[in-house]
Length: 388
Image 1 (cartoon, rainbow, N blue to C red):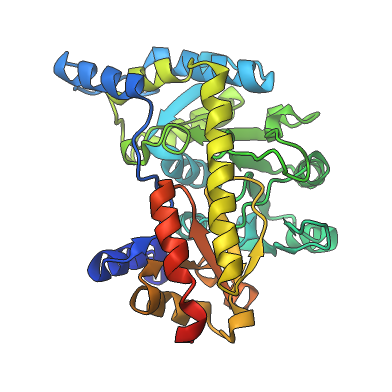
Image 2: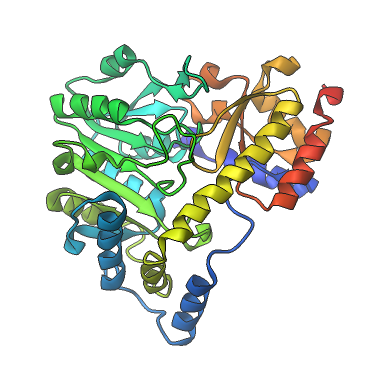
């Protein structure tokens, strides 16, 4: 674990705090979730719901997750096959630890959420990272080369770790892309671990349309897919760390075996509150995506005006930029200097890559902030060219 002693998020957030910069690095909202959710959690705390919840999770939340999957995605999920976890990060870790042994390989896409590489290392497995690069589509998005994807698979491939909508690129995989991933997983008898935490954050101008496609909905994939999501992003309660995983019972049982020796259980007062929030009207979820899309546009226009190349984000909290037009050759160096230069913090994309050259001049900004914060950040970033 020596390469993973700290995360780029923690480093940049600490830098933002130290310098008083606007933190557009770490992806957390600066507003709270729906009032009903907060009130329910507070009532649970004062009402004594503070001891260990059941190991698999509170039954009401497991049932609510199953209902949510049916309501939004047409998936038939047995609540008994839902496992509640300490955020999606634990679900991913428990899945990889449960399924992989030394010598096994995990295929994923780079840049990737940084816990992926650390989790694979913990399992003693080998990471096989397929590059995501800007495509010639208009507007461009990040996509993979089919030949490079096939080359990443081998007889030792045990898990394919998929994230769509994708952090950090903002790409949303199309049905054709997900089908190709699924075909290769089936060919190599691999399990797909699908990280879908941004499922309600697909924008109206996404190349494949404003709809998230769960891997498990594709033909033949439900039997080999573990689907992971969480409440943190959808309900703006990232600090609560309540996630879940569902899939075939034998795979969920394997994840449970690993998970119970990680955190055991967590979030007793939060779990029933989230169960109720998952039943909020459709308008809550559509308004969430629409509001984030507007924030994306506000920040993206400002980033472009500051001289950065902006890659359109089809979903998530994030937008990727290329600082090369400003003469920048190292995004890490730029991100360490940004707070002092203009009072804004961001994250270098090379920190998400097995091959740091892939994202050498790319920088990720988060737009899940209040409008006035984004407006101030845009004003500050306007002065960036003069400082370089």
